[in-house]
Image (cartoon, rainbow, N blue to C red):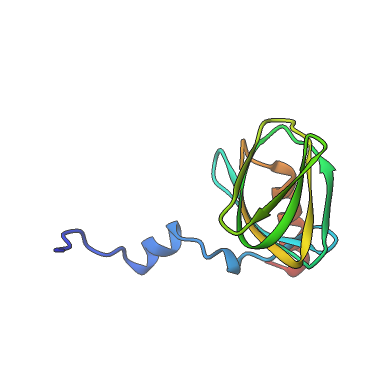
Length: 133
């Protein structure tokens, strides 16, 4: 395959590309950490849940899509448990109550929220300030 477009310059790359691991992790609840970033209209988080971590049942205005990328967890949705494994995807409506029990293997997820999770952005800014970034 012949490439016709030039590669981005290093400066262009740095303006557009984010390596999520360069973003300081934020503890969302005990034993649950996330790298958080937002565009103008949505938030993405890269979550690591320690073995047997729990996220209490909660709800938020934002719609949410969660992709299990490692480990396993039980999701509480509508008062029922759903066992999720790597490759499973769950979608939450606005204000739908949900929570998580990570397995003894822990769980890693990538999650998307729309509109932006301003509360998460504020947590990230507080961590950056504490770290002097």
